[in-house]
Every structure is written in structure tokens, then in C-alpha cells.
Length: 554
Image (cartoon, rainbow, N blue to C red; front, top):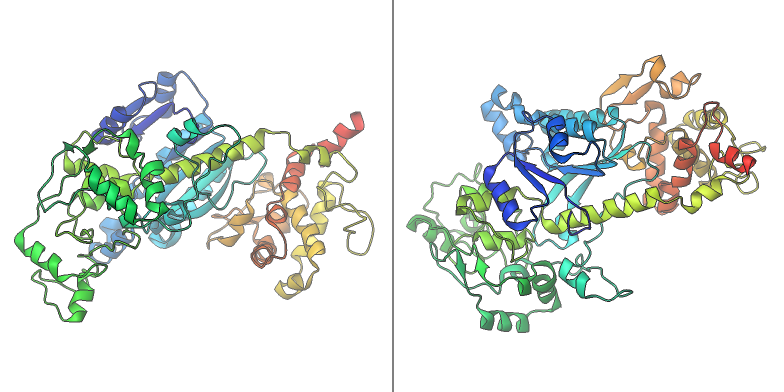
């Protein structure tokens, strides 16, 4: 987040070694605390900081309760897993959101949160955040598309405060250049990283590091510059770019944390039986006999030799226990902490002043810095656009501006002729007409006519994110009369999906909008129609757009 341009006020973790590592690498101006959020309420942090509001909160509640491995274990461990209290640790995170009212929050977790307890917690996170006054959507981060050399997929839950116009991008862009490159670039020159193509491989990240045998290495040593020179000469520009701009090798004076853990002789013999890019299961299928008492139904990928020219397996905290899933592509050992850190995109100057076991755990638990930077840059861009009085504000002040451009009767007449909706009630009537159509009838509508209703929907429900229409979940709640945003249209809005927040009656419209956008029938600016949302946020108590009133007064 710091590399994205944010001033980090505080960092909190319950692991002392993680806090020690943070303090060794970041400014003392940032408050770094070793605290359990379940026992450290937000008001205590506010008192330490001397602030009650912040712009952004990012965090990752412990993921073990949601992991797919944990869900497999549940078959054997029964109710003990179901009662895992860690599954509810998103709530202390949301307590901080409720207290500090950030403009944006981002919660990162494993993909398994989608399916844990049949999606119960995935729904709860979104529903609880929505109750706090946030427009919530989710997206899956595929780290390799952002320049990270591993098969990492993680779930992001993103909340934007309801009073802010705009829709957070549903797809992250690769991070901007490193802080060193930005400092050297002159104004006007491109500072973007093209890290999504070609894909960065494991060997691009670690191929210049000195070879080690199992158990070899020291905590700090000189780099082998001759090896690096020959390595870069033999590789393409991707490796050079990764080493210099992402890992910032020129800023590191010593090679640290490049120590190989020891392995017993049996494991080393089994490692030798596995070819590059294979699992033990693959080797057994080839006819190899493993000395480890290997159950192919349980340990499908327990032993995995990584491949130089592919993505690495996802770096996880389990590395602290053993490295059997991370066997080096060409050497009889598992990856070192520095190799794992490089795969996670930690710069080489980043220090891990703790024992090797803790190094592995910290590295495996981390969000890759390059991903965090991409998230931070997207937040910063969004906040800039949300704060700007955008051209859309001016557009809303013109004719028929109770709803955005595209609603004027000349280009988009209302069905059957007449003017476009001017009030919330008229827009609701138009939307109710659209909601009465079945899937086939919606698909048959001309694009402009469908967009007419879609924009009405976004103006009437500015708290909804269009992308949330892709996943409603199964749980439905009945809204009480005092919660209804459209009095007199109870049937349209009284039943909502807990996960997405979408009215059940509008599900087909959302599905059709997603289909048309995916098919290229209309643009992202049509799908994420911010002008429509802004109009909705500007309605006065009588259901008229305040943008119209502004135009009248001027």
C-alpha cells in the first residue's frame, strides 16, 4: 500500500515475529502493534493514533477455517471443524470498519471461503458489511496476471462507502513501477509495469541464486554476481525486469535468508525419483516406488518438484512445517525462505530478522507485495475519480437529468413514446415493467431499450454493484416496510438476496445485463453506469434529482 502512494498509519498483527519483521523494514512513523483484534477494540487504536477516521482499511482475517484442505479434513474431524471460531474472525475486522468508516475496505482470504459451510461465511461477510453502509462486491485475484510467478488465487471482498459515487474496478491492473523506478523516471514518461504478459516463471525469479544442498547456507552472504550476469545473459527481458524492478536487486547489499532446510536421507532419495514438474503421484504412475509410505488418495501432491519454466505452486504458511510440496526444480532440497520470498515478490532488500520457521510462515501468510500494490493503485485511482466532480455532474444538470445521459427522449424514448423518467417513482414504474418480463423477453429487447431500464435500476439502487449480480447465493431476507427504498413498490424490493443485496425481483435483469456486457453488446461504462448511480445519490426527498434543482437555481 505504501508503494501505491498511501501513508500507512498503523499495522496490526497477532504474531510477534510478523510485527518484528514489519518494524525492521518500514518507517517508525507507522504504528506497528502486536495485538489480537478480538481483544483490542477500535477505540483503543483510535486513541493511540489520535484519529477517528481513515481512508482505507485492508486486512486478511485468518484463513485456516476456510481453506480447502480444512474442508477436506472436516470429513474426518466433524463438528470440531464446524465450530472453528476462526471462521468468525471477519467480524472484528468489520468492527474496525464500523468504527473508522473508511471510504474503502479490502478483505483478502482464500478461495475456500466461497464454499466453507456451503457459502455461509461468504454470505455473512458481505451481508454484514452492507449493513454498515457499504456497497460490496467480490472478485478473485489471480496473482500470475499481476506479474507474480505462482498459481495463487485469492478472494477479495471490497467495500465502498455508500455515499461515494463510482464502482470499484472488477479487474485489477498490474502494479505500477517500483518506487526506485518512479524516482528515476522523468515526468511524462510511462511508469507502468507490463507484468501480465509474458508470464513470469519460477526460474525468472530464482535462477540467479547460488545453488545449495539440503541444510546448506547462511543467513547473510554476498551475491554471486558472475552467476547473475550469466543468468541474465541467457534469459529474456522478463527475468531482467523482474529482478531489477520487482525484486529491486540493486537496492540489496547482501543476500539474506537463503538457507536450505535439512531433509532426511529417505526424503532426498524420493526427491531424486521425481522429475522436474512432477508430483510423487506422477512418478508412481511412471513406475517409480517411493520409500515414503505414500497413500495416493490422501497425499496427491505431498511431494512436488517445481518446474523452472512454469508458475510455482502457491506459497503457503505450511512451508513452516515442511517444504515437500516445494522441491527445487534442479537441486535436491526444498525452496529457501529467500526463494519463497522472491516468488511472493518481496524485494531482496526486505529483511526477515527471525528464525527460519517464522520466515516461512510470514512469507506464506503474506499477500504478495505486487498484488497489494495493484490493489492500492486501484483504490487510489478510484478515490480520485470519486472525489472529482466529474463531467457526469455537469451532464446531470441538463435536460432530463433526473436520470443520466441516455435517458433523453430523443435518443431513447420510453416504451410507447413520451418522455423519459424524471422522478424516482417514474423510474420505478419503468423498472417494474422490465421486472415483469421473463428471460426470453428480456433477451429480445433492443440494446438501447434494455439500457434504459438498466440505468433506471442503477439510479434507484446506487448501493448495488453491477458485478454482484453474478453471485446472489441462496439466502433471501424479507425487508421490513421501514427498510424499503421505494415506498409503494413493495413487491419489487421487499425480498433481497443476503449475499449480493440484490432484490430477488430484479435477478433476471441483472443476469441479462451481465450476459450482454460479457457478449460485448455494451461497454463497461454502460454496465458500470456511474452517471445513473450519481443521479440516484442526488435524489431529493421528493424523488427528484438535485442535479435538476441545481440547474434550475443557476
